Length: 605
Image (cartoon, rainbow, N blue to C red; front, top):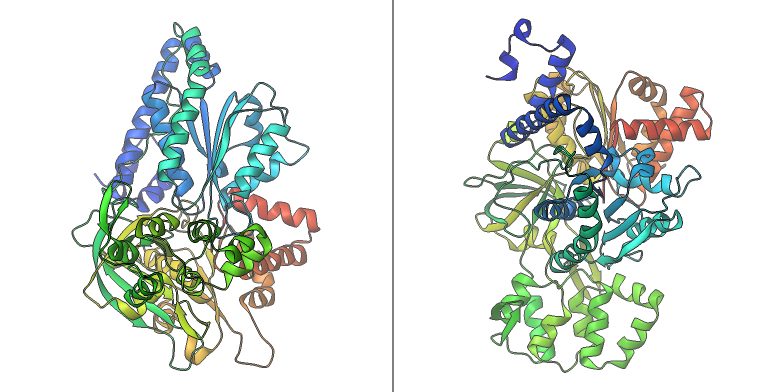
């Protein structure tokens, strides 16, 4: 029976509880509903056991589990954490898997065994869900952790300067509080799966003896408790096994004279079991430019038909360079390996100077390095210099409640001139200029539980999404319309010019006309002498923004992490101070409270 059809009179729930349950069910897909059903049954069973055994249940709680804390920006660290839990429980170890955003820092003093899986983004910053715990560990409030065993696994991208900085921070701060490093931290690049598997096995082998010893010591009294949160059933398609989906639409949605080339992309998911929610991302694999592949082969004097190996897979060098290896996004590891493989002293000197290396790769794609520093190496050596091609993640711009077996994206084409040539981003260039409608592209959905509409459809939402940051808010609006949500919706959108860059203008105007969008504030920065951005519009409407927050609004930001998101955060602080009568510290705490209540969420890149 659907929750919406439940007879409230027959329910053991209060009216308020029933409304909350109906609100939650409304935003869950069938797979998630099935998982919630199983989880509630398991919890109820555990409660029954507790009541039956009394003292033994208390003893179970005292037996410390392996606490697995994860902080994830795109879902990779969460995936690693889930794998740690699954393998630990396969060994018979009790676990507790917790998103850092849901973890109470005060509980640290109760822990005995901690594994941290955390990513890093931007300039060495923690992901959104790790911010509070990261800050707490550096504060005077952090407790002593003598006797605690820890292990940290970091995920990052070595093309950024502060590679895996957050993982380094967690390990050093836990150590400073007295926690013993049981297994050395590992810092993993984008191609991390095999190394992660090896580290997980090493870490669990190190934790197992003491964990099992304490479990056995209390075995006669222990009742099995649901420490581990069961994972929902997942699609058969994922990052390692993507779905070959049909590319149905690639349409430019910026004007002829725009400084930006933005494409609306539609992909069919028909024949897959892929589901997604507004706020999720789509991972897209692409093919490298065949012209660039030919240039690399020519410059290095290599035969494209030469057989090479990628792990256990044998294939031609041309196929590997086109389908499997990164040729656009530069990173230090390639330059280091290529310099060694070719014996190039000039490149080797650059590798030794970290600042020079950063400047060098920032200006170049990988094929630029090869063309500018050709050398002698064989086909397999070239392959071993490169890392695997990584899917690009795009915020999903549609709701399945509206588009069903489709998924929509809003893709800004990366384009620049360098060394006398036009350059394009790997995936955006492929979608915009080389992939024809009707071709198959390999995709998977990447869930983002840190960017969700409120469960209560009566809650108001404020959405700040300049440029392609509009994407998830198009999905939000489609979802709110499909759910007939009564909560008010307020959109802040910005771009350079009204006539050239008003993305989804017709749709937005229709939502205003239909009453779904209650307020829209636009910031077209180049349409007047003084540049105006979304943060300026926020300040202009500061009194109303604060009033919305005070009545329970959820505040969302999507787009550029380096400048826009920071400027919006500062504007929000200024608004809280000016219209809430708070000082700096109180305003910061106000926003921290919003974050802890999941009412201030960011999807930034």
